[in-house]
Image (cartoon, rainbow, N blue to C red):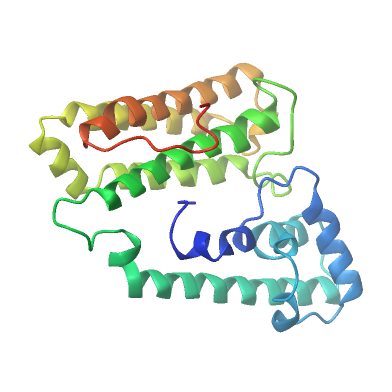
Length: 251
């Protein structure tokens, strides 16, 4: 979700959420794996590709079937066990190395950690806007891939969770104090309003946003565009840091 730290460094992020899956590789991969290993264990699964591990694989097994046979149950148990272990390892790594990972062990006036953190948040919104909304819904071009949690029909919940996390990060008391000390409280207010507008719209959309009308889908896309503009043009400059390069920012 945030593109730095132990999950990204170890490429575990792909094993947690292999997305976007434009060719539905998860669907075929999980089916083939279960057929070949009806008594699959977590240890065996650990040697398989990222395509069949993590959340998308579990979603495929749990939501694409009316009931599970023994082989599918073995897969769900193994995938859940492997995913839990992976997440626990990432959590332990953060707890052990948080100061280094956030780059706050440099000089007192270093803004490297702040820069890294907010550029990662910006990348989160831009990637979500592109991969989870624009491309699968075909808003600015030919439709490509599928919305998140397409099999479960819970694309709205995925996007809403990311917006909620973003809102929590951007209303953190420390950040509020930094902006207040620079007389930039209006930036936080503007961003909070934009996030609230997007969240309110999402609440009015169906669980599967692919079934919403095009005008509403476009409105959600426009809300996220507004959020990225506020982060780029108001929040990041107010903090005295710089917008970095990423592959989804249109540059």
